[in-house]
Length: 337
Image 1: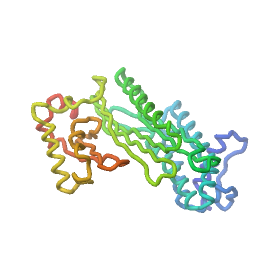
Image 2: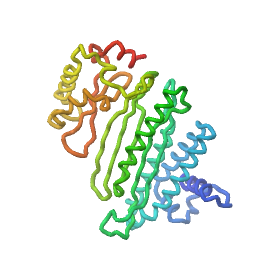
Image 3: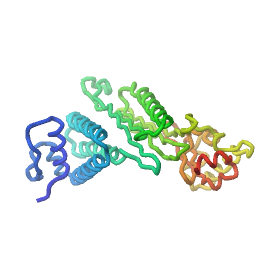
């Protein structure tokens, strides 16, 4: 007799959250009785997601110290409480329409699984843990019917160095935490807009840590939202943000050379967009703005903006070996050491 993973996981965590005296037992979908149990058991995709959730949850606990395990458990409880609370709103908004309800549950589960998978990011010399903030809430006055409460999602995740080894790494934790928190708090003022801010470590070595920032806003009821991508490259030893002169040698006329290389790549038609789809100043701004540089071991990508509102950047990649003639001696040490 097959046990449904999602219902079992729901029961285990639900019992822990609400501290009942009952004992958790294996659950057979043939014995499903509640609305949610029946909903889950009737949807193979949801059932499969819960199995993934249980695996990701156990993996996160197994790879954590006791204090970190406690935080993971607390966040899992908060997530489940929010999910159970929002189900009534979902049912009301969807008018019991199965596809709508299922899509809402799928989204919540997929997001939480991603958070658990991303709980720790391991590099050769550093381990980062992700902090997840969930300020989702019910808001009224977001639609014409002011009596109706709409569920608004407010999500933030950002990395912190696990067990920082010196004052420089401690400072990085403080700077990233403050930057993410301030920007998220500012956007939260728009009560009727869904937010999803992600700060992701994209490059790490002993000199430099770079974060890729993906920020999304979706006004309640809107067909599409807005998106902004940026990066945050930070020099650990110098305790400041990266500047263009940290990598490139101004004597080489590197700005003009790289602008020409990017324009040529767009003309070749192999990129996501062509020059007629970007702002006229986009290439120049991307080359001169390190907050639009996505750094990797093998390449440097430049974030170009489309020439229509609400769109994200797209990145055009140039390999370091192509950029080699324009990199300073200190720049080589910064990237390759």
